[in-house]
Every structure is written in structure tokens, then in C-alpha cells.
Image (cartoon, rainbow over the protein chains, first blue to last red):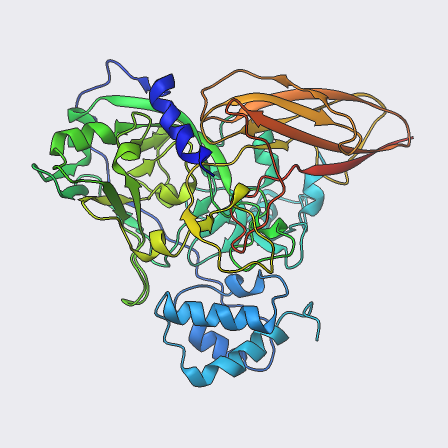
Length: 114
Length: 399
């Protein structure tokens, strides 16, 4: 996709699409601190053998929906995801957990073909 | 129209005001049209109920009906995509600082007010779309955030030009990239901090801004209050939220989020087959051209007679040349009528009609072409990025 860089490059030729707002420079009024409270993270993994391993190894960094929303992935694909969590994101998933965790991830999705 | 039929439980429970309130607090659900598409709808702070992709990191999808309301996506319906589980929840705009450092002659820490008073205020209408928008429709399916089509939105962004800030700090000779980091934090120290980088010539493009408002209001916290990077025409991944650190680099940024993540095959249309391997990859940059029908949903039924359908189109920054529509599944096409041009980075509305005959079924489709000549294509890549296939939806006509 060489065009990609050309498009933004073209911006310089076509000219700026931004509009200069005049007359509003000057100190805005002081703003109050903003505080929000997030809903609790979803921990509802689907029941299947090995559920406690998923609860222990996955919830530190992400909620259960990241697993339950995945399509029917293969054993190879789930193994790759665990490797990625460990290698790319530094997840402390013990090597001994890999096989039972993959088994759980396959079992928790009823759509997976056996 | 019939979109609400996806909502499990609707306002059928009229009852008293108290009962209604209780109902509004109850979780609602939606089923997106792909396997494992069950989602809850939850109102996060400053947001109406949105489709929860994941509660940590917070990732919220905009329901498709919202895109029919106009060119701009309301702030409380705007999608949310953080990468790390800990996002800022308490922000004091008075003590907020953004640091600009690295290979510059005049490093600076700017307060919010200082940014807004020292530099000219500008506005740009621009689409924000997640690189993985529509990933759930990849065939075959791929792992990752399983978005339907709602990881996108269009807003009127107000802020200051990044180029003005960079000119102030004076990049040194040899500066080639600018790296951005926000206030989100990982759960583990071993997780790479979320950082994105732009080439210096992109960073100094006059359309690239540090935005402190969207659609005339402060950014919602979940959309990056008090300041976020807006790179019109580029995928959302570059638009760092709660931005507080800008570093000018003299070497290419090789952090995880640039070197490993958000890359696509260096092939035509970023496309490969599921059995391909060993291909080179490049970082994502510009949005791909897309169009959507917004006033009808698949499975709707319509009365006979002339029937209007309408929607939106956008691309990576050249603007929309035209939108063609079909009511026979793509066998024949005709031009839709384009709505007002709100800028080449914005959603562009379009309208069309078809003659709905009693009892018939119609497969509706839209196909946009950008001014740069780009068209919507079928593509597949292992991360499900940059999808822009022609979408179809089937409607039936009552007898």
C-alpha cells in the first residue's frame, strides 16, 4: 500500500482541512477535577474443567470477555495466544499451565469442533 | 427500525417510574451477527449503554443505529478502546502536564491552559476508526478484539496543531520520529507501555492536532480527557489518549506497539491467504475507504413502494468521490446522492432509493470510491485489520 503515505502527503498539497478558530485565544476558565468510577471487570468465564486456571492466569491483565467473545479457535491458535501473552505482554503463566489452559479454552467454547 | 429486536428485553415492562429505573440499570444484551457474538450493553461513566467488548481493558462498541443520526457521533455513544487495564479515573486539569522532550532544543512541560493560550486553536472533522473494526466478520475468523462495525465514529475535534508545539520546542537536526505516550498503565511491569510514533513529516502535518474537545465539549474521560492526539486519516491506534508525554526521536521507534503490533502484510491491499507465511509487514497508516447503510438492518421488513436507504462513507483522507448502491446484491449499481461535504476526513452522508415490490426480497449494498481512487475490497490478514469489504443486507417487503 504505497498509496497510504501518499494520501497524507497529499494533505500538504491540497491544503489544511483544519479550520482556524479566531477570537477564542485566551485563558479558559479553571476546570474542576474529573473523577469516574468504572464498573467492575467481568470475571464470568464459562464453566469447564480448568476454569480456576483461567481465573488465575488471565484476569490480571484482562477481563473474561476477551476469552468468551473469541470465535471457535483451534488448539494451535489458543496455544499461540498463550505464548503471545507470555512473550509480548509478560504474563506470568507457568509453563505447566499451558496444556490445561489450552484444554480449558477449547472446552469453554461449545462451538469448537472436537 | 428493527434494530431493537436484538435487544434482549426492551421497554415492554412499562410499569412505574421506579420500575423503569430499575430496568435501565439491569444489564441488557445484544447478539452480534457472528459466532460468540453475545454482548452486554452497559453504561460506563459519561456514556450511554454501549456494547461491551471487554470491561478490562475498557473496550466499548457503538451500536449501529447511532450512525444513522447524522455525520457526527455523539460523545456519549462514541466507541472506546484502551489497550491496558489501568486507565486514568481521576484527572485534575489544573495540575495536568504534557511533557515534550527528546531531541529538541527547548524541552517543555505544558499545562493545559498554557497549551490553549500559547497556540492557535483549530478544528478538524475526522473519523476515528479502530484498525480492528469489523474483525468479527473476518472469514476465516481470527483471534483479537471481536468488533462488529461499531469501532468507529466521527467528531469535530478542537485542539492545537502538534506542528506548532513541535516548532516551539525546536526539533534538532537528525530528528526523524515523534513518540507519544498517555496515562494508561499495564497491570504488570513486564507489559510494554502503550506508545505510538509518527514520522516527523506526518507529525508536523497541519491537520494533526492535540485535541482537548470533541463535538464542542471536553473529551469524555474514556475517550482521553484532557488531551489526545488526533491524526486525521490514520487509524485510531495512533491517537494516543490522556496524552502526557511527547518525545522527539533520532532513531526509529522499535517499541512493541510499533515493531510487532498493528502491522499488516506488505502486500496489495494488506491481504494474504490463511496459509501464507513469511511475508514482510509494515505499520498500519491510513484508513481504508468504507461505506455503510445506516437506516436499515439485515432482516428488516419494509412496506411496498419507493423506499429510501441512506448511510455514511469515509476514507483515509482524500475524500469521497462517489457511492454506488445496489438493490440486487451487486448485479447492477447506480449512484447515490452525496450529502454535504464536511471535509475530506469526515463521514460523508449519502442517500438512495429502491422500488420495493410486495413480497420480494432485496439485497442492498453500498460501495464507495475515494477521490484518490481507492475502492472497497475483500481482504484477509491474520490480525483482521483494515477490513473494508462491501457490506450487504437483506430486507423483505410486506405483501
